[in-house]
Image (tube, rainbow, N blue to C red; front, side):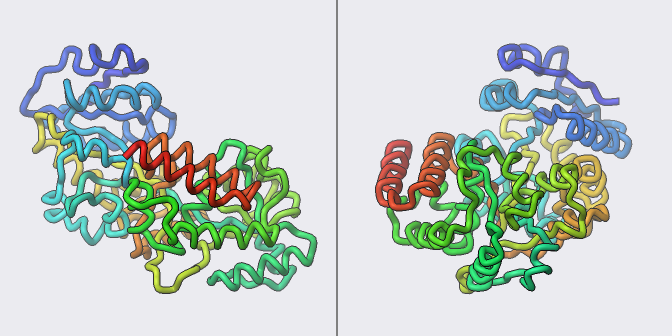
Length: 412
C-alpha cells in the first residue's frame, strides 16, 4: 500500500514532504492538494490501482490542503521536488513552465495515443508547441436554463447571437428577466466575459489577452464589451446583482423570475436541492456570435505534471500514462462527479454530465480555464472588478479599459 505524508500547513511543508523517504528505484513521489473528501478518495483509488498494476513501485503521496499547496508549490518544486505534482491547465501552469519547474511529456502523449484520446484538452496543455502534463478531469460551463419556461413561451434553444437576443426579448415580454447572476464576489462576471470574448474573438486571442500580450484598449476587446453592452442595454440581467452571491442568484431562476444562468455545472446540485426537476432544467451551449471563430468552451481542468527536478521520471511517466487511460479516467470522475477527458471514457447517466461531455468532446476551438485561472492574480482581480463595474455602469467602459490597461502594463 502507498505511503502518505499528510502536509496541512504551508509553514511545515518543507520539512515534512520527504521525511523518512529515500530515493529508491521503485519509488514514486506525488504531491497533490486533493484534500476534500471526493478528490481524496479519487486519488486513493487511483494510486491503489496503479500500485496493483506496478507492485514494484511504492508510491509516497503527500497530501496538502489547498491554501498550503498554493503557498508551497514553488518552494517544493525548486528544492525537494516530488516526481509528480497536480495543478491546472492553461495559463495557470505557465509560470512553472517558464521557470523550468515542469518538464514536457510529448513522449508520453505520443506513445499512448493521447493526441487523439485527450484531443479536446490538448490546446490547454500546450505551451511553445510542447505538452506539459496530463489532464484528468474537467467540468463544463455554459447556460443553464428553465426548460419549462422556454417551452411555455415557445422559445427554441438559441444557437446564434440573434436567436439569443430574440429569446431574451420574448422572455422580457412575458415579464421574465432573461439572465440571473450574482456578482457580489466578482468571478461570475468573469465567466460572462470569458464566453463573450471566446465567441467574439476566439481562444487564441483570449489566451493572449489573459497572458497580458494584448492591450485592454484594443478594438477587439471593445467589440466583446459592445456585445455585453447589448445585453445590458436590453436589461437582460437581474437588478441589484452586485448584492447577490452566485448561490443567492439561483433563487430568481428557481422561482421562475429569471430563465437563464451562465454558470458551471456545480450549480446543478443546489438547483435540484431547491426543487427544480430535470424536466424543468436544461443546459445549452453559449450561442455563436462570430461564425468565423472556432468554437471554444470554458472548462476548468485539473492536471498532473512531471516535475523537472524529480528523480523517478520513468515511474512518473508510467503513472501519467495510467492516469490518462479511459478506464482510469472513468473511475476517478465517477468519484469526483465530474467529466473525464479521454474520449472513450464512460460518463454517468446524469443528463448534465452527459451534455457537458458531448459538448466538450466535440470542441475544436480550445478550452479556457476561467478568467481568474488564465490571468495573473493581480490582473484577474482588477479585471473582474472592472467587469462588475461595467455591468452596473456601462457608460464607464472607456475609463474601465484604460484602468485595466494600466494594470496590464505594470505587471508585464
